[in-house]
Picture 1 (cartoon, rainbow, N blue to C red):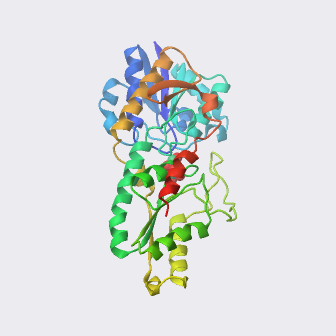
Picture 2: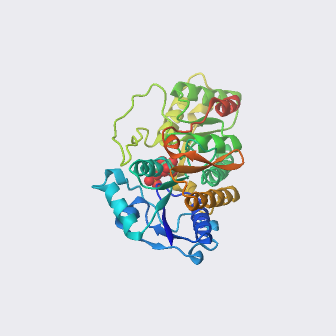
Length: 353
Ligand code: F6P
């Protein structure tokens, strides 16, 4: 009997369960058993997990989170990490592993692949920043949550004639901020790919105030940094990701805007009453049930990943290109990041006034 393993690593996102189900259904239908490791790479190190049955995955595509749980364990930073993963796989008789994750999880899969282990990658992240795929599942659900939040902030900001800065996830790229910001009419969209100075941001808020616009909504990706600011050195996480030096971005920016408007003598007396607030949407963006797009994308990618295992086409990542499910080279997929381009950002700039 052929056997493979499966795990979900990194930050969870809506659509993971649909993918797990796709892999398990496809593999079992072809006579391959699937061992589900618990908590990402941590399970592959310790062996914690279980053989998945069809009833384990029945209907789970409607659920957020992951039935396998997740962690940010980095095998390459653990003592004898790769050897321990190999030993676990050998003990369970697994010929290969389907790793569902973002750049960190897939980076580990790629490193293990180079050491001779059979890997299939499945891209997932609400951040949508993985290379070689047009979309990652999780992004659509998260963007919808962010859009709805911004829609709601409009009415309260308008009622109090305030500025509201809403901080959205996206440490390296601004996909959620631009998608939700465009959809929900954020007046200013701030993303890491296109830094702006405080003066540039403030000018838009002040011009709106001067024109008598009642309020301003700013959608800011958490990784946005003001142009011209010194980079802090807060160290790195287990995967070498630089810790953000703009902690409290939303609050700090909001405070700076409030102060600057109140002190601006070119504005009328109303400036003295101007207030600004901030909202951090945080993990709300990752929680809850997946959108129809993410359920179907997760399902299609999962079935394709199962098919690659069936055909022993290891060393690949499954992806979506246009409307087609395709395969991409895992090594290429983890070497670059997919950033928001000027085509999309120029549209945001058009509305930024
Ligand atoms: O990797 C996806 C992501 O949602 C990022 O946008 C965010 O910075 C990070 O995860 C938060 O991770 P954690 O859940 O570990 O705080």
